[in-house]
Amino acid sequence: MNKGLFKSVLDFLADVLFTPSVLLIVIWIFVLGLRRVDGVSMYPVLHDSDIIGLYKLEYIYRKPARGDIVVFKHHNEHFVKRIIGLPGEVIKIQGGKVYINGQKLDETAYLPAGVYTTQGNFLVEGVSYSIPQAKYFCLGDNRLNSTDSRDFGPVDKKLIEGKVIFIVFPFQRLQMFHKVSYNIK
Image 1: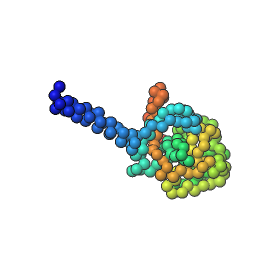
Image 2 (image 1 turned 135 degrees about the vertical axis):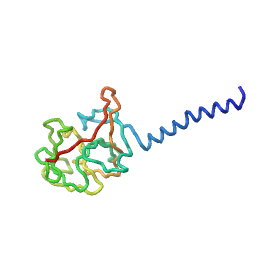
Image 3 (image 1 turned 120 degrees about the vertical axis):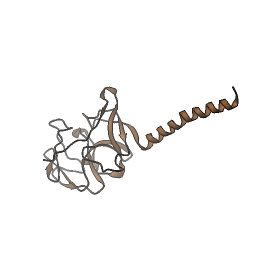
Image 4 (image 1 turned 90 degrees about the horizontal axis):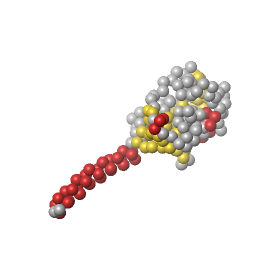
């Protein structure tokens, strides 16, 4: 085989393999990501050891919304929780229910009947809390087994890594997440 043909084949292989690989790495680092769910705080929606797909650019052009399941960092740990309270809102836990601006939050779209929301170290029963600007109040769906904003306070938008958009593994649980609608009663 002559050197010119060999170099052409190597150049072709570099273009075919290298360029897409670099593109995939860039997409992986800046656009998408996978995380493993550690624990049962989002049960029954997410299970321990589920692998979830994360869209990292979701909040560049839009604000996080109530109901979004997000991944954020807190004290060098990744947490997966649902956004419940938005900046500027007043949140309160009373009688096992969550209230936003004095209105009971309807969480029937994702919480099983009978789920009781307890107080934490940060947000205590019957005490209203005004969520600061650029911060979000995040709770686990498994309220009795979740360390969340009730314990450590609201999450700064800068610490939210992205929105959970689907379950990747196990394959039998593969699903996309859609926007949740709310009626505040």
